[in-house]
Image (tube, rainbow, N blue to C red; front, side, top):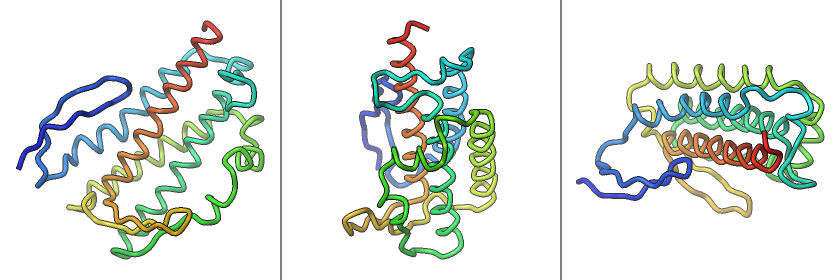
Amino acid sequence: MATKVLIIYYGVKENRQVDENMLEQDQILKDFVSCLKLLKASIDGLQGSQLDLSKEKDEWTIREIVHHLADGDYIWKLCVLRELGESRVAFHLKWYWETEQVRWSQLWGYASREIEPSLALLEANRNHAIELLRTMPGSLSKTIIIEWPGGDRQEVQIGWILEMQTNHVLGHIEDIREIREVHKF
C-alpha cells in the first residue's frame, strides 16, 4: 500500500510516495552516509578559532558539535550491534542520559580537541555500519526496544535508528550554517 507523506529533509519539504510494505533500505543507507559529505562541506575552509564560535554565548561551538556527532553516532551504533546479536532486546543508555550533554562535552574535552579524529571516527563508524548492514538481508527491519529516560519503552527498527542519526547530523549542519551566518563566514 502506497501512502503520500510530507518529508522535511534539511529544510526542504518534499512529497514522496512511500510503500508501507517495504523499507526504503537503499535510500536510508545512502542518506546515512551522504549526510557526512554535507557535514564536511558545512565546515569546509574553517580553521582554528572559527571552529570555536557559537551562535550565542553558552551554546555549542562548531568544534563541540563535531565531537558530539561522532560520539553520539558511536554510542548509537552499540544499539544496532546489540540488535543484530540479540533480537528484540531492551536497550538503554541510562548512564549517558543521566548526565547533561554539556557535562559530557566537558568531561570528554570537546572544546580543546582537534576535529579531524572525530570526523574520521564518524566516517569509519558509518562505513562500518553500512558494510555490516548490507551483508545482513533484512537487517534494517530488525526491531529493538529502546528504554527512554523516564521509563518509556519504544519498539523501533534499525532503519529508524539510522534515520534518527541522519537527521541528527542534518540538524547540527543547520546549527553550523546559522553559526557561520551570524559570524559572516
